[in-house]
Amino acid sequence: MQRSMRLVLVVFCLSSFSSITFSQAGMTAVPFLLISPSVEANGMGGIMTSVTPTSSSAMIYNPAQLGMLSRTHSFSSDFYTNVVQWLPQFNLSDLWLNSYSMMYGVNLGEELPNNVSVGIGYSKTFLNLGEFIQTSQNNPTEIGRFRGYETSDNYSLGFSFDVGAIVGFGTTVKRIQSHLSPFGTEITAITGLADLAAIDLGIISKIPLAAMLLGQNSGPTTTLIPVVDVLLSYAMNNIGRAVDYGDPNKADPLPRTARIGWSVEAGAQITTSQSPFNFVRMTIAREAEDILATRNPNGTIGNYQGPLGDIDLYKGLILSEQHKFVDVRRGFSMSMLETITYREGSFDGGGALAYKTTGITYSTRGLFRLIGFMVNGKNGISYTKYFLEHFEIRVSQSEYSRHPIVGNTKFENVVFSFYQ
Image 1 (tube, rainbow, N blue to C red):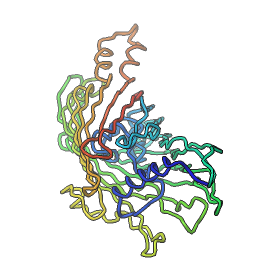
Image 2 (tube, rainbow, N blue to C red):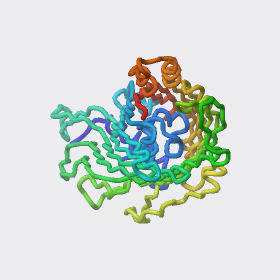
Image 3 (spheres, rainbow, N blue to C red):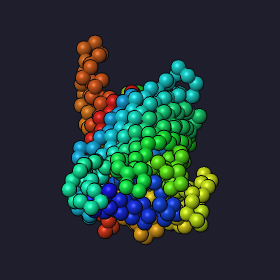
Image 4 (tube, one colour):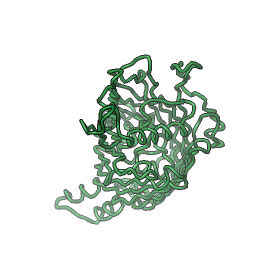
């Protein structure tokens, strides 16, 4: 059997992307799991594990973010407005990426000690490889077609609690499917089909430094107070068995990845008798990541590395330098009046894959809250006021630049959220 040359080109593109990005792993299976699907994160160099979450897509790389998001959100849904043309420089119109997510959260407040919150979520990432033609070995006549794709269905659980710092934990169970070809060959019946499970684990902590030093401000008056929060996070993704496509002797490891990071969020917050309002907020974030998969000299799968792999905390998180096989991400964002957020960042995979990112988000949060503040209801009750103060629409765009392969990759999404 033969496949069209387009399949060869697509697989080559994906393999090249995986190789230049994660040379330590050599050739891991299902490299699409390494793609960052979050539109807002992709404006900050792909950082999503160590910043305050604003939508359900944050749980895709760190399930602990679901526990953090459930403190403020009862519902959030995040989806692309257009599919992402992946590796646009190759001009393959049906090589595209799609992703969406949703979550439901409950903040139990005073019902349990330490202000516990719990969230459940679902997310999906889908990489379309296009439609391919099957022909026989010696005859170009079409005898069948198939659609190539790879997908991950993710089911997440997260919770958080307040011990002075807010601490969140989470886990995700994944069903990963790789559909490179449904056919065997004239020599072997092995196909390009794989269906397996994996899990993610994550932890995050948010330390409210300004609140600890200055104390919580409350009362009937409106006050402008400084806010400084420090976030620390760690996640391990894609923990599972090797992918063998039907032949255990030709297995490739999953791209088990360690991600560790920090961020500092600083700004000014307006406190009122109702709820705080973020006047301005700036975020600086750094993350380091390393694939933990290894291979033996004979090409067989070796043992996975420890929880940090080759990550040097000083070089990766303080100096923000790419080292060994460790990739670093850098991000910055500024938000004004809970209405507009500008982002920029960079990814450094050792020079072979180093690119810049930019992004912007427009939110109805600030405007809706302002209108809700002016709405008065009968007998002190107004459903319009409640809706405006709790509902949010976010529209975001981000883009990769300054790289010959991933440059000009553009992401767009819309987020619908309901606050608690």
